[in-house]
Image 1 (cartoon, rainbow, N blue to C red):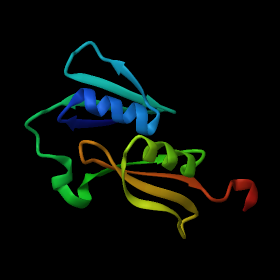
Image 2 (cartoon, rainbow, N blue to C red; image 1 turned 45 degrees about the vertical axis):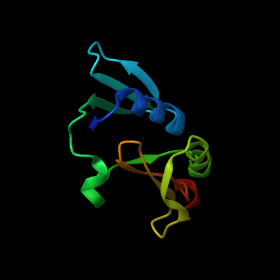
Image 3 (tube, rainbow, N blue to C red; image 1 turned 90 degrees about the horizontal axis):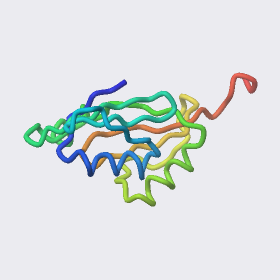
Image 4 (cartoon, rainbow, N blue to C red; image 1 turned 120 degrees about the vertical axis):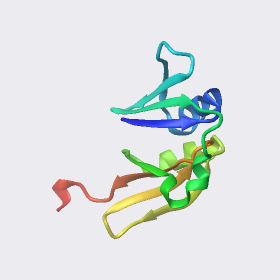
Length: 120
């Protein structure tokens, strides 16, 4: 589970839903939302005066999402207008991955394993 400060909660909720396929849940407090997908949960809190995540540079990376098909996730993110910071690539650590920036400036890597345990 991750906890993030976001500037615009509605805009962030739409991004996680449309670009990454997360379900968005109310939390009983209008300043918070829970984004959930495949066991990953992100609590987002409205913090309009917080330092923009993009201003933290490399420290804006907060998650690596392991998915079944990084290329399909990349296509979804592109279709939703996400900013891709690293194009899809096969990496020496046996992952196919890409990086994106959220509407709040947080960065996420998304990837799938190139080999399964049965292939080793």
